[in-house]
Amino acid sequence: MLDESMTRASGGASPHGPKEKLLANWTAGAADYSVIVNRELHSFKRQAWLDLIRENAGKAGPLKVLDVGTGPGFFAILMALEGHCVTAIDCTENMITEARANAEQEGARVNFMRADSHDTDFPGETFDLIISRNVTWTLLDADKAYAEWKRLLKPEGRMIIFDANWNLRLFNEDVMKEYQRSMEDYRRLFGEEAPGYTDAELDYRRSMPMCRRLRPQWDFDALLRSGYRKISCDMDIGRRVYDEKELVKYRVNPLFMLIAEG
Image (tube, rainbow, N blue to C red):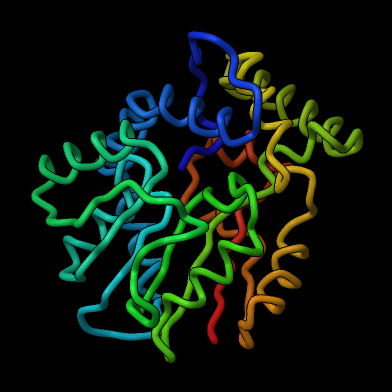
């Protein structure tokens, strides 16, 4: 799913409920996000992300992998080209369409399908590895989703979550001030404005319950409630996967990696 490198117009009538806003946001953003994913696939980020997942997957050899919130398929493509058996889900058909096209272009074989991340139809103990990038901040019921992903993991399986407090500044004055300072530094260093959001996108983000929570502290408690017993966290992996501009832009909301096992 999407991080803060995107800006686009949603178009059409404004949806009302959180679920409707979520679906409208990611349906409208699929093509633009696909452009970014294709750029990442042909940059240093391809190897950087692959190395990070390899180091933390917990197992060697071909794995059964579930990419939750695959978006245009970045993680799914990387893992499939490594020889893993990959299933990838997303909540909108537009994202799945983009992902299939990107996978075909890269020569990657992936089982893409539209599905609800909170409640899947997969049998229990199906996957060795579950991965997601910038997805959990979009969840309407993270407790339910974490429990579902736990159900899907094999007994020795592992879950890797990459995310950040992307929108905490919308609810925290101190974080907003830090964000504004980062934007000033961005303008000074690069001579341009960092990409921002439309009013509709900001409205969507304000409606997402995870955006108000201080993470990953909240996630630790939620993962324990869901039955995970071994949890670890790297609080700043941006240094490995971000370019120079992103390191400044996302300084106030560092990218973290959560690893959870049963």
